[in-house]
Image (cartoon, rainbow, N blue to C red; front, top):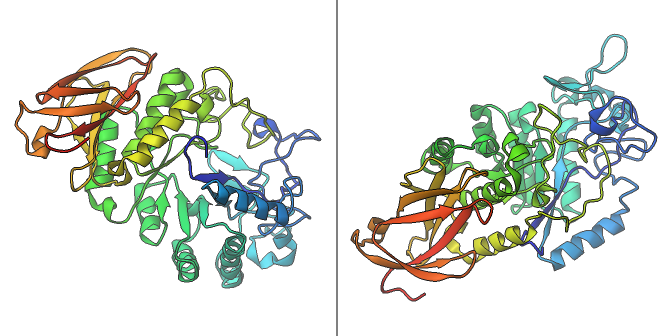
Length: 426
């Protein structure tokens, strides 16, 4: 809340299985104190409608939700349809799982990844319709405990008809519930999930780094067909994805990716550690070394080099400027340097106009001449506009359509300006 966020998202908070439990860094040999992965859901303590005993009770969860609301925060939960091998469902509903002739269950895989600590349910044959009702009721159960936002884990690996039915069943009862599709998969499937009811969607933003890539992708999302049904949530990193760019970019890279995520899209997120510029990878992989998916970590949130104040300022800028609350009003403008991207947003009444410049090179200062969109304000090329630097509050004037910017990654790799045309009050 202090940094300006309004949603706190938890990975699964359910009991964690003990059979085939993973150790640190996803090893197959856990130590006696290793907690296992929270995505290995279920043990003798309960399943998807239970809370891990070490986290507390349902009374504790109720107090958490109430306290979050007092701070203007919503709680979002992970909805992951998978089970540890000792999940209660396996004994209670063997018809929900696929069994080998020798009586064992095949563990889950998403090549090249292997998930020895979880098994998948199936959705048809003897499991239909009971598993559909059970999963719907799990969502309704948590709604009853004050949760209205669900980040859905890997929805593209489950039947699309199930999602269409389940989301409609929930929204008919609770129309304010939000479903976020965590589907990093083929474009056709991502779009299909949005069409059948997912409120928000993960996107390819995480892997779009160059000016050409970002411009092409955002033009598709904001100007082409997807704008009618797909609302992308730009997570700058996730528990599963430690982007290569952030592994080597240093502090400036975290700042530039933050600004891109927060101003290109209307909804964005960061995973714990981003605000500390944490990017240490498993060598050669887009995964975090010593990932807290497999161990309990205590972070020093004041450690040197953090960008908490930068995040706070940026979220305040987002909140105070209505132009940034819309998505399809995004426009890109000429900047004569491939390492500098300039874009902007304005309200329909043109009473809030925001222009953003981002240095995409986290290691070197970059300068560029760029165009101020005077033509969109019905102004001639030689007109003057009043400008406010939203990071430092400095006010000045621009005279003429072509201006210059210098962005030093060691100072601030980004600039955000609010423009006031002649005749409008500041």
